[in-house]
Length: 343
Image (cartoon, rainbow, N blue to C red; front, top):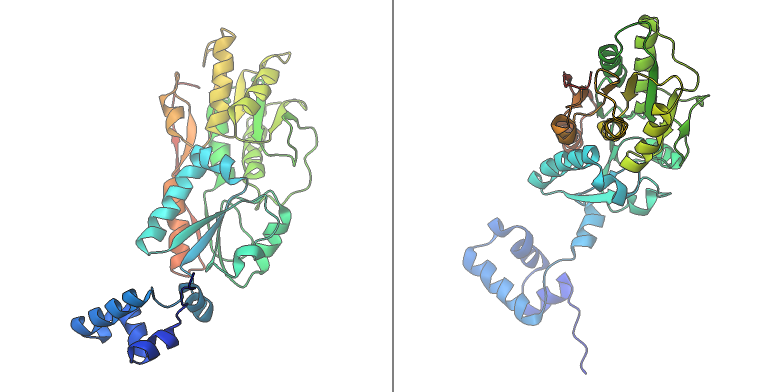
């Protein structure tokens, strides 16, 4: 069987008797040729089996790939099922598509962004990756980086005031000095277990939204002169129902039983409400619950959840705009409190 000839820009130009530039213009700069001339060249190339200049080679020469890697804090499988993360991805992709830029999803549990750095224009990083090595690689890469919900001093970031929002929502949940508080936290520890938190590791509060939210809760608790028992903070490793349910059951069977649950996400709050209902307790009469994120399911639940609503689609849009514009701004997205029936 006769091998199919592999054409290059130079060889195809020689074959049809035109310059390299003329062939290149026919594919990439049609305004440089008359319509008739361009159609003749494209027809000749098609007949000979030449589909155009090598895009990969062009990108390598120019350093422009029109691809952005979106670094997720966890596995891609987990993140695309999380309603908060999926809204962020929607926002990012809406801007990139308008600018004819492709999106590459990159798992935050991977060990090396350098495996894709040579083939992308840069990185948008959503949340602090679980792999700490990636943070240093993002800090030192020569490519453009925009971070969301954490900062690595690259001067392009987007987020909300997590500590302030957590402080405000906690003050809505706590009504008196005699309240008994439980905090259902998210990723307060580097652990795969749902467990109580007695000692927190030293951490940079600017790089962890969970610790920022915990700081906000503690500020409200201290200001209201409420006692938080040493065994009433839980670590939930992933924002998933079954992990949250374990923490909620432990909290609700503690003695004395807490009457206020401060939940670091709406998914955690929804799991807690399910367990409270199963125990035959009343919300908010027996137990008050607050959430964080403002996902649609929280607003539709019975009762609806009092929560911090952050516009994650808008956050994704702004992150992508910062990338496209090569901006160096640090942008705070506004949030608001959704007053539901849970407290």
